[in-house]
Length: 327
Ligand SMILES: NC(=O)c1ccc[n+]([C@@H]2O[C@H](COP(=O)([O-])OP(=O)(O)OC[C@H]3O[C@@H](n4cnc5c(N)ncnc54)[C@H](OP(=O)(O)O)[C@@H]3O)[C@@H](O)[C@H]2O)c1
Image 1 (cartoon, rainbow, N blue to C red):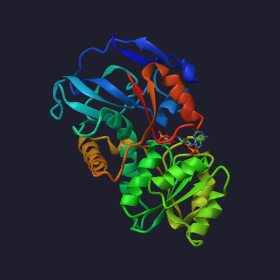
Image 2 (tube, protein in one colour; image 1 turned 180 degrees about the horizontal axis):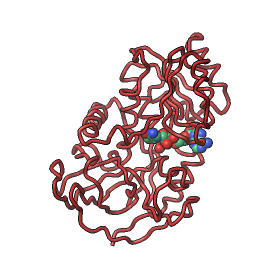
Image 3 (cartoon, rainbow, N blue to C red; image 1 turned 120 degrees about the vertical axis):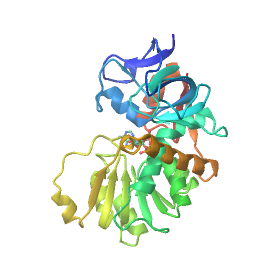
Image 4 (cartoon, protein in one colour; image 1 turned 30 degrees about the vertical axis):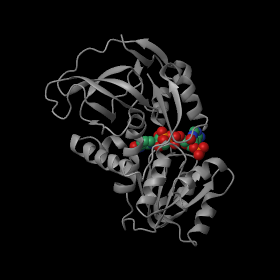
């Protein structure tokens, strides 16, 4: 029977247990996939702690790559034996094999490894929709400054490289001098250690007092106010995560006072809700990775059974780039 990581209740990394679970046959619109590699994402922490609630017991994990083992009725874009990768709801990728909806599962090009596929789908599709579809009203033009928080992380290092390929001047924030250097090495135009420097003052300095048109903020609570303060009039705060905790409730008037700002809270799962949009975004990601403009950096690898160690490192801000689990 395939092994799966499950939690019986919300809590710390110690809640994650390796269990034997039957997988069964795929129903209509589903496939069964045997994982060769599994992606680790910060959302897995939110689901483990209960910040994002799901019914319990819960199998964790939203990203993986492997071989299609069985195909349910009505699935036409995948066949038994295909190499495939996905970012997907519902969770359950921390497993040797699973049955899941086929909608967000994409064929993985032969020249992209399973490890890379597992590392890049959720994080790369997120960078794709942020930089291409989550834009300020005036759009972004080559040479524009953008601010991207936690830029040395999984999503962050992909965004640094992709922004550079688009001609954007990405200002990175990261939590140490080494992480700042990593962001610069991956295409960031500037990097600010937001644990030791005032990022608002530094962004104003870099942009000659003007501020940026857009901030991509996955840190949440700790950076929210500063992110609003570095925007130009009509600028966009694109909030997409809560690594430091959720953004507290606020009065919309604050957006007016700070320069008729826009704010949005985005989630990948809206963008990949249809097979067509998911495949179009994946094709864009595959193309940029195959061109060499974006390299998927896997800095941490763990056996599936050591997933608690992986979560502990991610929450302690001890990781850079992507992490994967090997089943
Ligand atoms: N909405 C969406 O569609 C979507 C999709 C994918 C990811 N996300 C979000 O994007 C972010 C990045 O995801 P990821 O999987 O690539 O993770 P990651 O960036 O590799 O790891 C999170 C990073 O956040 C930073 N951070 C700042 N304050 C923190 C705190 N108090 N505790 C822990 N970390 C803190 C740390 O970098 P520093 O040490 O450099 O500060 C840490 O390495 C996450 O917030 C995730 O939820 C959202």
